Length: 265
Image (cartoon, rainbow, N blue to C red; front, side):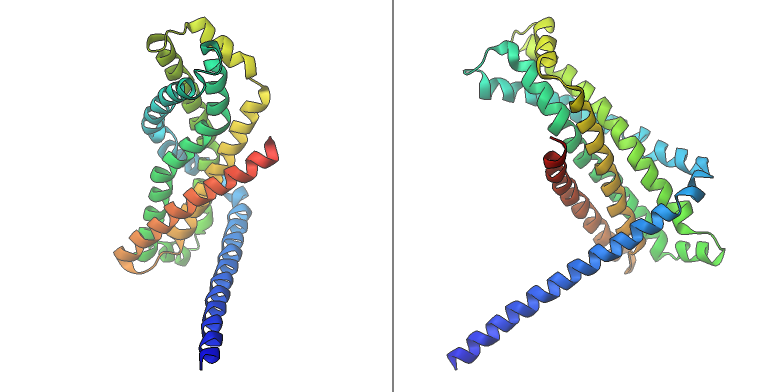
């Protein structure tokens, strides 16, 4: 009897694992097909530049205040943390080097992407999900209008373009805020701080920052568009799929950062 129960328990574990693995493979395949359909509609979307500029304004320009506000605190905290961790080991003149390296390659693109996920990812999923459950997307199909051309691809392009731009602004302001903290709270002069920033600065740092932010913009918009486009279940369903989109985008940002660190560095 005990042996039968043991086998039954193992069978349940195997069934559960197999079901989860199958669902994961199906999800990856579905997202891949969805992404390929978006790429296929790129030429048609580029022939309608007003759709792209409108989404760039909504997703990019309107996100500037929250991104800049976040970057101010990122830079300030970075200066304090670098001084706290390395203050007894290295001279304070190297503070700019540590802050610059961390902000350019990690803190700037990653934290900016996570902040943007909360705004853009949720907005995309909620907006498209509402259009889906209220049958506005079906109405577009009935009018021979491709939802990928008019709704999805412009959002993908706008996110891929504007997230790197927002990240550059965020990195610049984070460096400035770190310099202000270093000068007025830690007693490090303006010249000494930026001399430290230049000490370890490489052009590769900017490339890493831009590449990371481009990939993050792509995965944020992809997650938001995918879960929003396939939302169902009315208002409750829209909320559920919006939550899934935000969680998926954040996980993809962190996983993508891990992969890009090993590829780019």
